[in-house]
Image (cartoon, rainbow, N blue to C red; front, side, top):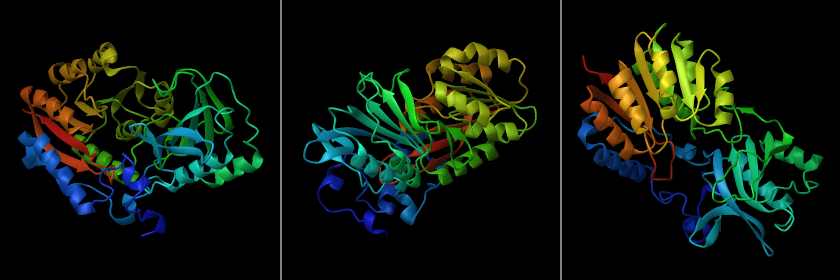
Length: 370
């Protein structure tokens, strides 16, 4: 194991609130997550498959998307970390963060001016795109971002560095306006070859995400002419799969930047921007001409919006449904509604997308009863 992965028994590593399982063995963490899912998804526990996971060193250094608070100290300079009560726990060397994230943090800590000149509130990195969220509406002096600094950031894996001018940062991380790109390119490509920007959501472990998409595709088995609705579609990794299979595909996503990326990533799909519940009229129009119906959903922790769940269960009624969930509690509630509406849970596949934490995601595969 690399030296940086050896966590000290005391200090910042153990006080950090970010990874509750960081002192657990892989087996103990997996057992706890599996038991949690069995309790939360008790009516269908017999359909729970073994957990899909990565092993060894792949359980560390995987987090490519982070959001850290920033705080200036006259003694220590800039610290980046997570709050625990009223204390910021610095985690610049967090062993869960990917190497490019740690490289960017260290370079910024050396380079950024003091808070009086550079009112930094948050540091956000998504893959090769980083954002500095500033509590001001004015662009500060960027003399520190010289050619040598740019070269160092690029050598560490960064491709774009954004400023987000947001005087009210804290109540909400991002505002609609106030974006500046002082260096680099506005978009990057992930391991799937998909375009993404600084705010795009990405699954943390591409290997496991690929497995989850494979399982969903195998189960849905989309064929030319099938109508496939993909809700909360993100930047289009799943959309691209359905269109390659010849499906007639429609996706819905809330974030403007995410939709801008999804459209070129899956040019053959129709992508609508907005809340899924607000796009039900368009979904109904699209469904009126759909043939065999399939549904793929990847909602936030709150689960499917009630109106969307009602539409799926009572109106759209797909022949097959794949539901990737990051909350076993909301998944269970949604599955109860679908089961009462004539759907059978075929398989539940857990994915350990977040090693060292108690979080686990589950892919539920459902078929409509004949």
